[in-house]
Length: 196
View (spheres, rainbow, N blue to C red):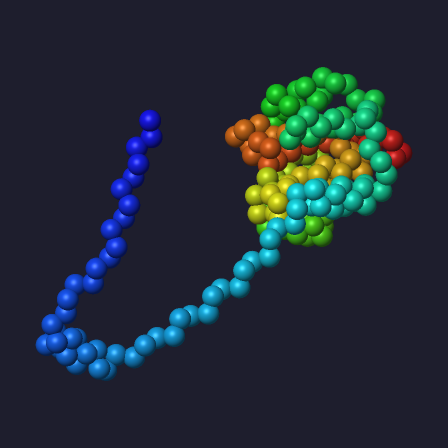
Protein backbone atom coordinates (compact mmCIF):
# COMPACT_ATOMS: atom_id res chain seq x y z
CA UNK A 1 0.00 0.00 0.00
CA UNK A 2 1.36 3.41 -0.99
CA UNK A 3 1.70 6.05 1.66
CA UNK A 4 0.25 9.43 0.88
CA UNK A 5 2.50 12.40 1.25
CA UNK A 6 1.11 15.15 3.43
CA UNK A 7 0.08 18.17 1.38
CA UNK A 8 2.47 21.11 1.82
CA UNK A 9 1.34 23.87 4.08
CA UNK A 10 0.94 27.30 2.48
CA UNK A 11 3.75 29.76 3.24
CA UNK A 12 2.76 32.45 5.72
CA UNK A 13 4.68 35.68 5.73
CA UNK A 14 5.89 36.64 9.22
CA UNK A 15 4.45 39.87 10.44
CA UNK A 16 6.80 42.85 10.12
CA UNK A 17 6.66 45.70 12.55
CA UNK A 18 6.43 49.21 11.04
CA UNK A 19 9.73 50.19 12.75
CA UNK A 20 11.54 47.20 11.16
CA UNK A 21 10.17 48.06 7.73
CA UNK A 22 11.29 51.72 8.08
CA UNK A 23 14.76 50.64 9.26
CA UNK A 24 15.13 48.22 6.32
CA UNK A 25 14.05 50.84 3.76
CA UNK A 26 16.50 53.40 5.24
CA UNK A 27 19.33 50.85 5.06
CA UNK A 28 18.52 50.05 1.42
CA UNK A 29 18.05 53.66 0.26
CA UNK A 30 21.47 53.85 -1.52
CA UNK A 31 21.28 50.40 -3.05
CA UNK A 32 20.83 50.28 -6.82
CA UNK A 33 19.13 47.40 -8.52
CA UNK A 34 21.32 45.50 -10.99
CA UNK A 35 19.83 44.48 -14.26
CA UNK A 36 20.11 40.79 -14.94
CA UNK A 37 22.98 39.90 -17.31
CA UNK A 38 21.87 38.79 -20.75
CA UNK A 39 21.40 35.08 -21.09
CA UNK A 40 24.35 33.44 -22.86
CA UNK A 41 23.75 32.39 -26.46
CA UNK A 42 22.86 28.75 -26.77
CA UNK A 43 25.64 26.76 -28.42
CA UNK A 44 24.81 25.11 -31.70
CA UNK A 45 23.90 21.48 -31.21
CA UNK A 46 26.53 19.04 -32.52
CA UNK A 47 25.92 17.53 -35.92
CA UNK A 48 23.92 14.32 -35.71
CA UNK A 49 26.17 11.28 -35.45
CA UNK A 50 24.83 9.78 -38.70
CA UNK A 51 25.50 13.00 -40.63
CA UNK A 52 28.99 13.27 -39.11
CA UNK A 53 29.73 9.64 -40.00
CA UNK A 54 28.60 10.24 -43.60
CA UNK A 55 30.82 13.34 -43.82
CA UNK A 56 33.73 11.36 -42.38
CA UNK A 57 33.27 8.57 -44.94
CA UNK A 58 33.25 11.11 -47.79
CA UNK A 59 36.49 12.66 -46.47
CA UNK A 60 38.12 9.24 -46.24
CA UNK A 61 37.07 8.36 -49.80
CA UNK A 62 38.28 11.73 -51.08
CA UNK A 63 41.60 11.38 -49.27
CA UNK A 64 42.15 7.86 -50.53
CA UNK A 65 40.98 8.49 -54.08
CA UNK A 66 39.89 4.88 -54.53
CA UNK A 67 37.64 2.37 -52.75
CA UNK A 68 39.15 0.17 -50.06
CA UNK A 69 39.38 -3.53 -50.78
CA UNK A 70 38.62 -6.05 -48.06
CA UNK A 71 42.11 -7.54 -48.59
CA UNK A 72 43.71 -4.27 -47.55
CA UNK A 73 41.76 -3.09 -44.54
CA UNK A 74 40.14 -4.78 -41.60
CA UNK A 75 38.16 -2.75 -39.13
CA UNK A 76 37.18 -4.59 -35.97
CA UNK A 77 35.16 -2.33 -33.72
CA UNK A 78 37.34 0.70 -33.07
CA UNK A 79 40.57 -0.95 -34.23
CA UNK A 80 42.11 -0.27 -37.63
CA UNK A 81 44.32 -2.99 -39.07
CA UNK A 82 46.08 -2.76 -42.41
CA UNK A 83 48.43 -5.15 -44.17
CA UNK A 84 49.78 -4.28 -47.60
CA UNK A 85 48.82 -6.98 -50.14
CA UNK A 86 51.58 -9.57 -50.50
CA UNK A 87 53.02 -9.00 -47.01
CA UNK A 88 53.23 -11.76 -44.40
CA UNK A 89 50.49 -11.77 -41.73
CA UNK A 90 53.34 -12.36 -39.24
CA UNK A 91 54.39 -8.71 -39.77
CA UNK A 92 50.99 -7.47 -38.66
CA UNK A 93 50.93 -9.91 -35.72
CA UNK A 94 54.36 -8.77 -34.50
CA UNK A 95 53.39 -5.12 -34.95
CA UNK A 96 50.17 -5.54 -32.96
CA UNK A 97 51.92 -7.39 -30.14
CA UNK A 98 54.54 -4.66 -29.74
CA UNK A 99 57.46 -6.86 -30.81
CA UNK A 100 58.74 -4.12 -33.12
CA UNK A 101 60.26 -1.12 -31.34
CA UNK A 102 58.83 2.33 -32.10
CA UNK A 103 61.60 4.66 -33.32
CA UNK A 104 59.69 7.97 -33.46
CA UNK A 105 56.26 9.52 -32.81
CA UNK A 106 54.02 12.12 -34.42
CA UNK A 107 51.27 13.72 -32.31
CA UNK A 108 48.43 15.26 -34.35
CA UNK A 109 46.39 16.56 -31.39
CA UNK A 110 44.99 20.00 -32.13
CA UNK A 111 45.49 19.73 -35.90
CA UNK A 112 42.67 20.30 -38.34
CA UNK A 113 42.37 17.93 -41.34
CA UNK A 114 44.69 19.89 -43.66
CA UNK A 115 47.31 20.49 -40.95
CA UNK A 116 47.25 16.78 -40.05
CA UNK A 117 47.73 15.76 -43.70
CA UNK A 118 50.73 18.08 -44.10
CA UNK A 119 52.25 17.02 -40.76
CA UNK A 120 51.91 13.34 -41.68
CA UNK A 121 53.52 13.86 -45.11
CA UNK A 122 56.46 15.76 -43.55
CA UNK A 123 56.84 13.08 -40.86
CA UNK A 124 56.92 10.24 -43.43
CA UNK A 125 59.55 12.19 -45.39
CA UNK A 126 61.63 12.49 -42.21
CA UNK A 127 61.10 8.78 -41.48
CA UNK A 128 62.44 7.96 -44.94
CA UNK A 129 65.56 10.11 -44.37
CA UNK A 130 66.24 8.40 -41.03
CA UNK A 131 65.16 4.95 -42.33
CA UNK A 132 62.82 4.41 -39.38
CA UNK A 133 60.98 1.09 -39.66
CA UNK A 134 58.36 1.55 -36.96
CA UNK A 135 56.68 4.80 -35.96
CA UNK A 136 53.68 5.78 -33.89
CA UNK A 137 51.08 8.25 -35.20
CA UNK A 138 48.91 9.75 -32.43
CA UNK A 139 45.66 10.87 -34.07
CA UNK A 140 43.55 11.13 -30.91
CA UNK A 141 40.22 9.58 -30.01
CA UNK A 142 37.97 12.33 -31.35
CA UNK A 143 36.79 13.48 -27.92
CA UNK A 144 36.95 17.12 -29.09
CA UNK A 145 35.24 16.44 -32.43
CA UNK A 146 31.55 17.11 -33.11
CA UNK A 147 29.65 13.98 -32.17
CA UNK A 148 32.89 12.67 -30.58
CA UNK A 149 33.72 10.86 -33.82
CA UNK A 150 37.45 10.32 -34.49
CA UNK A 151 37.65 11.83 -37.98
CA UNK A 152 41.47 11.99 -38.00
CA UNK A 153 41.69 8.31 -37.10
CA UNK A 154 39.95 7.30 -40.35
CA UNK A 155 41.77 9.90 -42.44
CA UNK A 156 45.23 9.02 -41.11
CA UNK A 157 44.58 5.36 -41.97
CA UNK A 158 43.46 6.30 -45.49
CA UNK A 159 46.47 8.57 -46.02
CA UNK A 160 48.90 5.91 -44.80
CA UNK A 161 47.48 3.37 -47.26
CA UNK A 162 48.41 5.69 -50.13
CA UNK A 163 52.13 5.29 -49.35
CA UNK A 164 53.90 2.23 -50.80
CA UNK A 165 56.40 2.22 -47.95
CA UNK A 166 53.63 1.58 -45.37
CA UNK A 167 53.66 -2.21 -45.00
CA UNK A 168 51.17 -2.43 -42.14
CA UNK A 169 49.57 -0.54 -39.32
CA UNK A 170 47.63 -1.47 -36.21
CA UNK A 171 46.20 0.15 -33.12
CA UNK A 172 48.87 1.15 -30.62
CA UNK A 173 49.35 -0.70 -27.35
CA UNK A 174 47.60 0.80 -24.28
CA UNK A 175 50.76 2.54 -22.99
CA UNK A 176 51.41 4.04 -26.43
CA UNK A 177 48.01 5.69 -26.93
CA UNK A 178 45.68 2.72 -27.46
CA UNK A 179 42.78 3.49 -29.79
CA UNK A 180 44.06 7.07 -30.17
CA UNK A 181 47.23 6.03 -32.02
CA UNK A 182 48.56 3.73 -34.72
CA UNK A 183 51.77 1.69 -34.84
CA UNK A 184 53.02 1.92 -38.43
CA UNK A 185 55.50 -0.48 -40.05
CA UNK A 186 57.58 1.02 -42.87
CA UNK A 187 59.60 -0.83 -45.51
CA UNK A 188 62.09 1.59 -47.02
CA UNK A 189 64.60 -0.89 -48.46
CA UNK A 190 61.96 -2.85 -50.34
CA UNK A 191 60.45 0.39 -51.69
CA UNK A 192 63.88 1.61 -52.82
CA UNK A 193 64.56 -1.66 -54.71
CA UNK A 194 61.23 -1.38 -56.54
CA UNK A 195 62.15 2.11 -57.79
CA UNK A 196 65.56 1.04 -59.19
